[in-house]
Structure formats: C-alpha cells, structure tokens
Image 1 (tube, rainbow over the protein chains, first blue to last red):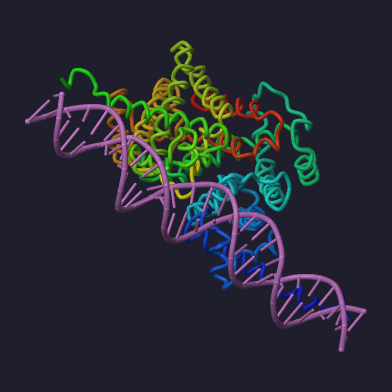
Image 2: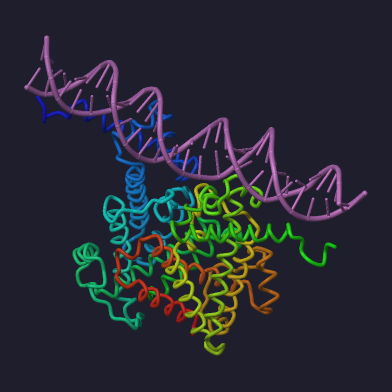
Length: 234
Length: 234
DNA sequence: TTCGCACGCTGCACACCGTTCAGTGAAGGT
DNA sequence: ACCTTCACTGAACGGTGTGCAGCGTGCGAA
C-alpha cells in the first residue's frame, strides 16, 4: 500500500535532509559561511562525512540549497516590513524595505555573505535553481516599489539610453509584465538602479569598510534612502 | 661597509618578497583569490611551503599586503582617470572616477573580490595597515570630488541628522580637514553615500547578480552615475 | 683569511578539508 | 522467505595552512 501515505524511508530522508540544512545554518551563524564543512556537519550529526553525499551530490549543492532558503527568508522579511506600511505611502514602503534588508544583514552577516559574496572558496552560483527564484522574487518586490513611485518618478528620468524589454532577462520581464502591466522597460532599469543603491552601503558595511570610518552607518544609510526616495519624486 | 649600499641579503630578501607577491597576483588572476595558496606559490618558485613563512608570518599577512598593493593601484588608476578631465567639469570627473573603478573591476574581478569581498576563507581585514592607508586615499579622492561639487550640492542636502567631526574616523577627518579646509562634516557623510552608490551596482555585477538580469549593465551604471551627478546639482 | 653565527630553506609532522568507493547491514517490497 | 534497495561506515587520495628540528651556505666580524 504505497502512494497514500509517504513511505517511511521518504519521511526519514526528508528529516535527515532538514537536519543537515539546520546544522549547516547553525555552523554558518557560528563561524561564517566557510564553517559549512561536510565533516563538521557529519560530526555534529554523529555520522561520517561521506554519508551526506546520499543527500547532496556535492558541498556546493548544499550551499546552493542554503542560499535559496536564506534568500527566500530575507525576501519574506522585506515583504512583511513593506506591507506593514500603508500602500498610499510609497516612500515609506521603500524605506521599510531598505531598512528591513539592512537590519537582516547586520543581524546575521553570514547570510549576506552567503548570498551576495563568495560564500565558499570557488563557489559559483548556478544559472537557475532556488537562488535564482528568490532573486526574481526580490526583484519583483523592488519593481512593485518602483511601480508605485513610477507616476512621480517618470518625469524625473532623463536616461540617455532608451531601454526595451529585450534588454532584460526574459524570465524577469515575464514576471514584471504580468504583475505590473503598463510599466515600461525604463522602470525596470530604474529598479535595478534602486537595488544597487540599497545594496552599496550595506555591502560596504558588512565587509567592514564603513564602520571604521563612521560611527553611525545607520544614519548615513537612512539619509541615502531618503535621498533615493526624493529622487523618485516622492 | 654597510649603510651606504643595501646589503646583499636584504636585496635578495626584497627580491624574493616581490617574487612571492608577483606569483600570488598571477595565481589570483588565474584562479581567483582562493587560488592564493602558499603551497602553489612555493611550487611555482621551486621552494617548499614553509619557506614563505620567512617572508610573511601567515598567509593572511600575505593577503593583507596584496590588498594594499591592489587597492593602491586601483586608486591610482581612478585618480589618473579623474585628472584626465578638466577641473572645471566636476561632474565629468565624478563620471571618470566611477567608470574607471568599474572598468578596473570588470577587467580583473579577483582584485575587486580581494578588496571588497571575502578574499580568503576566514580572512578579516586588520584595522590598520596598507589596506587601510589605500582606503583612506580612496576616500580622500572621493572627498575631493564631493568638495568640488559641494557649493552646488549643499543646498540640496536635507539630512535630518546633523553630523559633526566626531561622527567620523579621526584619521579620515585629519586627512579631509587638511586637504579640504572649510568643508563641513555633512560633506563627509555625503562622500560615504557617494561611495556606496558607486559601489552597489558594481558589487552586484561582479558577484553575478546583475548580468543575468540585464544585457547592458554598463548603461544602467552610467545612468545611475549621471543621476548621482544630477543629485549633486551639477 | 678564517671563524662563527645568522638565516633561508628543506622535510616532516599535524590537523583539517572535499570527494570517492568497496563493503555492510537493516529495512523495504514482492 | 527472498532479494533488492539504500543509508551508512571506514579507509583512502590529494589538497590546504601551519609549526618545527635540522642543515648548509654565505655574510660579517676578528
């Protein structure tokens, strides 16, 4: 009698997979992304290192899975912070998103390094997979913020280059055109710029370049985001 | 007779040190920052790994030295690009600086990762040293760009927080007040924001987050820098 | 010129790491 | 009851950074 209930084997397998990921995250938060060693995980679980290869074909695949999980969690946190601000305050929603991402990054720099840095020596993110999906979701969230500001922001855009949908990733374009019909390609370019602007100071701070120079990076960041909001005409 | 000429020992030592650094840079450009292994360097030089400990107390010290060298070289490249634009075109000088940094980063992403990312598992940049010196020089260069724009930019700044010199690193403050007397602390905060703004999109691109989404990151970056210049009132 | 010593270097050791693979034993389905 | 599947072990291979005893050469001083 199979099919109805999940087989015992499959359930145990799922539990073990979850335990591996949980321990990997614990080790990462304790010692940084490079503390994710198969041997350390196995040691913690009372297994040998080779056993993990029944669950992940290689360490990089484990890392890829972790990136997907972590990325999804931060996007959900940002979305929640955004939704806590009324929709008729697009500037406030942008600020909420930005502050949520920075707060998350500072609370656990390892996660930020995992997603936006070199998580592990020699690791290269795969073109697709859970990480890419989460990134698309993040972009969609940012596009929503830009879309709300677009009526005010459009007249202020004086780009020398005219963008077309062909300039962007088809998957992203499909997402955007479905969720925000009527939004022009130029707004997508603006979205990427907004992303970069939110990212820059946080990246510098997480990697230790900002804190030695200024005592209150939060204030600088807030000023920057306020300037960003103003530059959108809000 | 010592003192006049450098002793033979010291000269050989300097040559070997230079060779270690040169090979480390070569390996890095070939296989990324994590290819900087003492064993690989020694192999390339026909030595054993332990020998390098006569020149650098640990691998992290070698990396620190490399960071200093690479950081200095990119700052000099940016300064040269800036100086190729007449001083009465502050916006052009900002654009030149930004484009030079981006071009350098794309030409050798390993250098960018070395300075602004996790160069090596577990590496943490020391509080002082050649890297910090180069970073101060970079900040001074950026401050010069902001200082030139300050007359136009100051009226556009509406920060809610008022900055004082105490908010910043004393060394940086000393540098700035010596080179740009009369510049207020708020301009220093603006400098850091400009830094972050130049950094964000490049960091995303180098770590592979931007290129899959847009075919012409250069155009997006240029638009962003032009918007930055406009936000300074130029 | 000769002697002594400093120092660059070797070779080995240790403790880690990711990855592979033959073998084992228990659980599953038939 | 049988047989297959599969998670797991334990050993191995090649890689890494890092210490340390010892050796020989060449420098500098007597």
